[in-house]
Length: 234
Image (cartoon, rainbow, N blue to C red; front, side, top):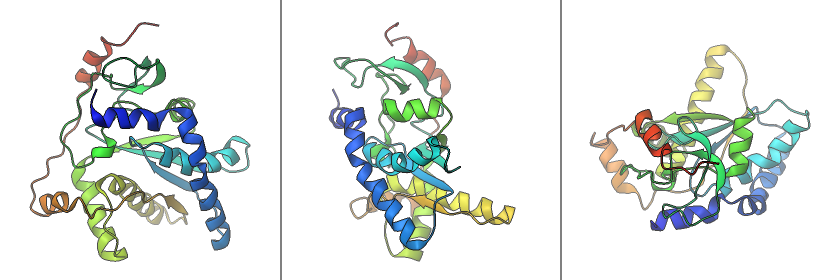
């Protein structure tokens, strides 16, 4: 069992997600102080999924109650696209196949991630609660390759003075694209995303990006189909 998989499993179980909703509750209070409410909430589809769920769930409550039309967007790397390319199946949460079966969007528990500069985004699956919301159409998903994300992270660092973690750069990329789309449509759009990590320990990744050494890796669908053969039949 890979160390990152052991860590990831404890982060995708439903009970772990719920107590992190303090993040979203605080975000609601901050939005009220600003006199705004988000039109779109952006979260990372990452191994530490409690942060994504923690931000989204309190706002999702109002959407489910019919009080808002807020969009919810989960962003993931193109090299590990469990939502955008995975299948909604029962699978194990670990590579050894020792955990209970969980229904989630998965690339297969035998998935081995490429060496991309986004370590926290390389888990093979997704939290069951978030997967259910995605399956029901309440959450959108978008996959980005590395280079556009580092472009966004570099812009963010230069304008905000904060060096984001490679994982967080995916949410920043999506936020920038949402803002550009709103500008082109001539609309006002309130965009909320969670900056969930800093990049002070990932400066080599930024150096590789600035030196043009990063390669955009797109996970092929045929590998997903091959991995699905190893999933248990329910």
